[in-house]
Length: 109
Image (cartoon, rainbow, N blue to C red; front, side):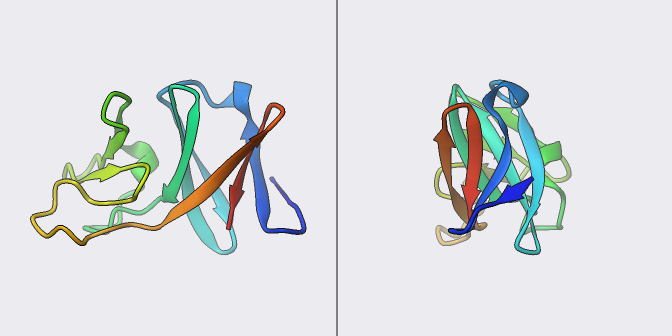
């Protein structure tokens, strides 16, 4: 992983993260989960806010653009970080911007 001057962290090449898959990276002292959903990339905190499970171990629904925690089935919208299974409407995990340049994927932290 490589950091550029404007806090863009290079996480992988596009060929290294197939559709429907995720990858955990360390950046700025955080674990960040990067997902490839039909060629679009998303990054959220790799931590379920319920019990701390790694979201990269969860299941991905490409149609809904969501990940479901493997421990207790809490679901998260990958574009907003919103917990879609929580009864309150204001429960979120952290999200990060993702940029693709040529064939490289960067997370902006």
